[in-house]
Image 1 (cartoon, rainbow, N blue to C red):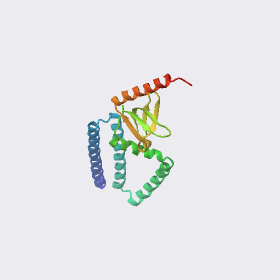
Image 2 (cartoon, rainbow, N blue to C red):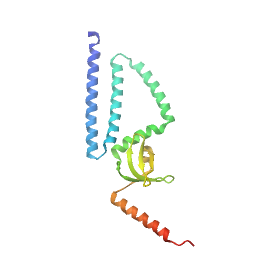
Image 3 (cartoon, helix red, strand yellow):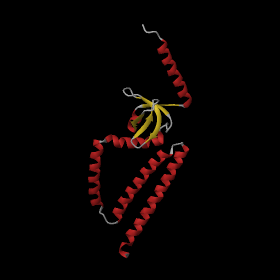
Image 4 (cartoon, rainbow, N blue to C red):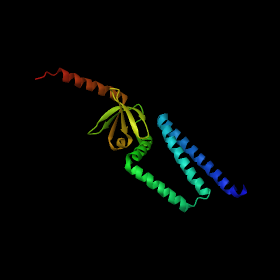
Length: 187
């Protein structure tokens, strides 16, 4: 038992340190979410990412503490990252959508419940944001259709947030245009 005492102490310190860091980061994220009025679902998503990174750091730290040589770990990690890199290269949009989702949590001016217009020349979309997930945003159109729109495209395209008072004006204008079109005589 005494032979492994230094590794046990180092493992305990590493675990305690990572738990404290995770707790501090989680508190900061929750406070940020409350201050910026983000919804609980999005906060939970970011907290899952923090937990995953903490666990990954714990595994790497424990393997180093318990005697895995850095050279050997480097070979294993480079092999793993090569396989992951090839997989992400084949599906690069997965990584960009995850990154975009995290960026949108901290910086973008819209949230669940907002009515948005995505200014895309080929495929313009508009609707209420029902959910913001890791890979995509779920929009509910005025026809109650659901559209999933990739997070990476949300960063690339222009997006307008329609405020509630502007939304009523927008609906009234569209109804007036429809009424004028129907009233025009056909030649």
